[in-house]
Image (cartoon, rainbow, N blue to C red; front, side, top):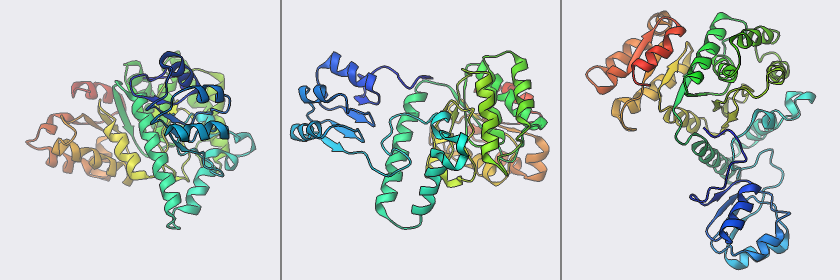
Length: 373
């Protein structure tokens, strides 16, 4: 999995997403004809733009000087200028980082880009303004493109579970150990990117490079802010204290949504693919979990995710079924009896050999491996 936003130029796919890529393409190719340049500040690249062929190129949200923009249009390039007044960039070429979404946290969560984007979404989602809905759609498509570029070739395992799982509980610690074990096994952990079980799995992935004691200590320190209520600010600051004390942790992906904007993204996912459209986010998360999905105890949202994942496995619409491991027999057979329906659906189909129910979270990695994850 790619770990640095300043990756090398994509000479094969004709997308340019950083200044470094821009310089590499101009130097190596001597032309930008047919390239797509996403959200790259080209204000200081006027000389290169004026001297380089840009026929058929597309510039999406790239700040540049007016004489450069005029020359590009004369070449026949399409120039989509930056959109002023937005708390997000609809043309972004890379996924979010925790530092980007939580910038300004020292003044309070309400001042962060994450909170401001949610506030913008709340103002615009019901006004039937095609301009706002177009911006949201462009943003989400750009995020999907960046996510696919990041995960290319990675074996991804999804970890699903409820947001209510509190820091300081044994369930939270178990989910964190699961994320650590999966990451150490060479898998990329992907979660819904929010609090609770999702945060715990991302924390475990973050802790993977460190000694085992680090995760125990981190879980202990996080108990001072056990939930994102009543204060998201305190909850997030506690996480960033862990990141500061133990920098350069392991990589994982969080895929949250502003549709549930009252739930903040957790800061332990190294790469955050945040969407406006929840349906796009949920389907994308499950579709990219090519090494299987572990379902921890949850409520309605997790039940929905189980059957969102079961449907393509049932019809094999994405190819061979992927493993599904449900954790906590009592939860999935008594409190929310999802397992009996899942087994009934799977009977005499190829997905039947790809589902498992385990009692304890410690059994999940072995079950996943046994099922082919």
